[in-house]
Length: 82
Image 1 (tube, rainbow, N blue to C red):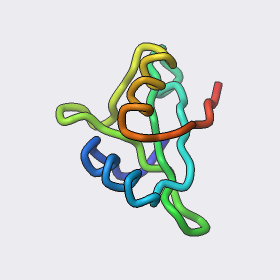
Image 2 (cartoon, helix red, strand yellow; image 1 turned 180 degrees about the horizontal axis):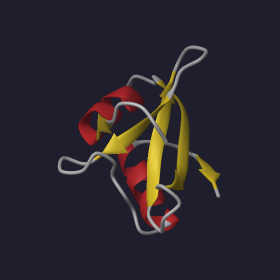
Image 3 (cartoon, helix red, strand yellow; image 1 turned 135 degrees about the horizontal axis):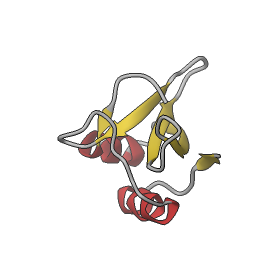
Image 4 (cartoon, one colour; image 1 turned 45 degrees about the horizontal axis):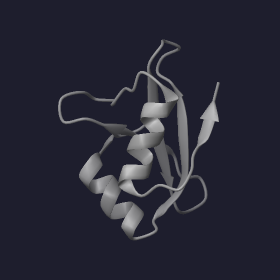
């Protein structure tokens, strides 16, 4: 997952405006943690990872945890890259 990162409050606003085109969950750098990235509208749009206030990329220990976060911000689904 590459690109500039987006914070949770901005993600919530984008979801409310229906601006999020796709969501992807994948392992961060092949490690045990999972990351979430979004793609906004338009062809050729790049993946933008979700970040925390302290870290460049927010990490979750499980897909269940990512799912709870996604539901909490209003995302209805995401793709998983294994």
